[in-house]
Image (cartoon, rainbow, N blue to C red; front, top):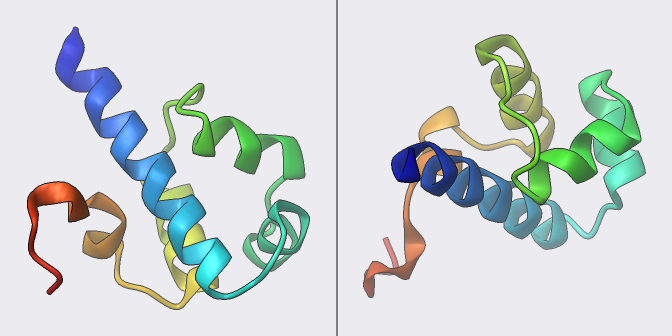
Length: 79
């Protein structure tokens, strides 16, 4: 199913983007979210289908709304 891969890719790209904006490593994000470092890497590479609970942990650790991690920023809008 193509849309499944698209949402995983989008989520992973956004996690990476916001993590880099905070200038923190995958390991630091994992620590803040109480998750394993390799799990964060797998999420960023769209290799893992993540649970809602872990989405919330990551969003809180990145200091963003859950919806920000699901937005497509490649549509030309910078909102």
